[in-house]
Length: 514
Ligand code: ADP
Image (cartoon, rainbow, N blue to C red; front, side, top):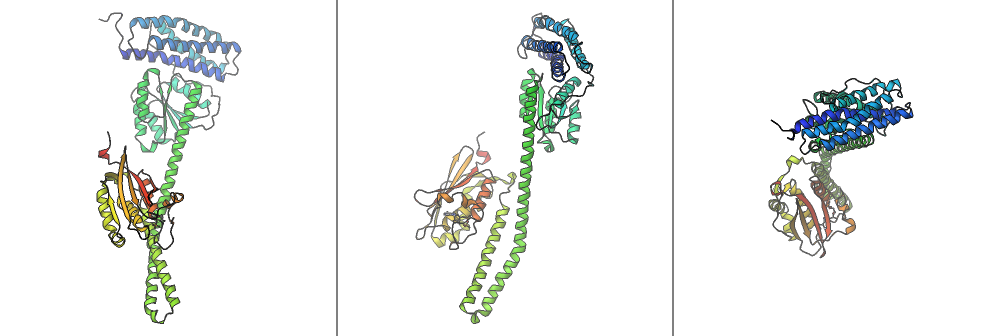
């Protein structure tokens, strides 16, 4: 048997708090609306309504201090609350009687709702706690106070009066509002209508707010839809779960109109930003697809006539060589050379358009030591011709893809842009910082002026004329490979002469800190 001082089970206290808070929210909310909407209210009625609102708020703080959300609550506390409530409840009931003469008939229904709610509190104060919520919709249309960018909102709450109150506040702020009375109803409406924001009550019978939130967020179609959780004070820990599960923000009952408006405006703004961001990345995808299509056309439709030009120019040279004067032979050589360069350009543009759109799933552990072996084999001819020395420190395994073309371009350039009369020396090293590796390719070549450090990565940008062959695509390709995988690439002058190209790549997943 429980003694008078035994703590009451937490769930029972929570249920009691909920039972009391609902009528309190109605009193505060309807009083606030009457004060805001009722321009025809006389001064005395206004004073009474302000008094009602103040008394209700006083009861909210009594409730919070006598029945705290955490800590033990005993029977004596409930008794103390009953006693403490008597005065402010009596004052509310008195004021309702006084105000009834001063409100226009259109507002009487709202006053009636306040009266019903006050009756529930009175029943508690007098010893009964079987509380019921008012359950009919008001007849009066809401006045409007438009906001800068209104939205299409869905209010989800199992309590009809809560829905109605919030709906009217929101409509007054200029929003378009639909209502749902439970989770499944909300999900049905969300599937059919282009809402901007859902205001979701945490505590609902059956499917609760968190379950609805999870169902919304698990559907990729609704990833941009904003969700604002509506909660009471002692549900704060669950609010944290909701924010983690993807809710935008939360609102605490009873609603404070200014805060309500600010938070909804902020959530709508975030939703619009997300929409814009998505539209931009779609455009980028479209542009990339167009580039790929162009590359495809280039590879097939341009290569064929190019090859024909080259072949026939060579044929002409061979057949007419004896009968051609020196000028004509030179002209023909120009044509052959131009065709060859254009062929190289077409090949490079094709390569450029094909990289950098790497799906995350294609990235895997890549051992850079093995990549180095492959690159040196591919560059064997250039290394032998120039007598270059290509060395490296111990190199890591990174998480990425397309590392061979990346390093091959950088090392190939280090050899190609060598200082005349000097043996090219290329050295590759790696330093780890947190979750990224920085890989450096250092050479003793002609160097790049700091004023060109940025532009060398632009497509087709070359600092040299025809004396050194190239298309200006190589470094643009490198940048695309690196940035496509979340890394950075840049060039620094080497103090002793030459350049250091550096790029970052994510550490292999298995080697990351937990
Ligand atoms: P390409 O080599 O085909 O001209 P890149 O995009 O690879 O095109 O390089 C762009 C320009 O950057 C080159 O034309 C060259 O002027 C300069 N450059 C690249 N790598 C080096 C390097 N290691 N040393 C000096 N200059 C370089």
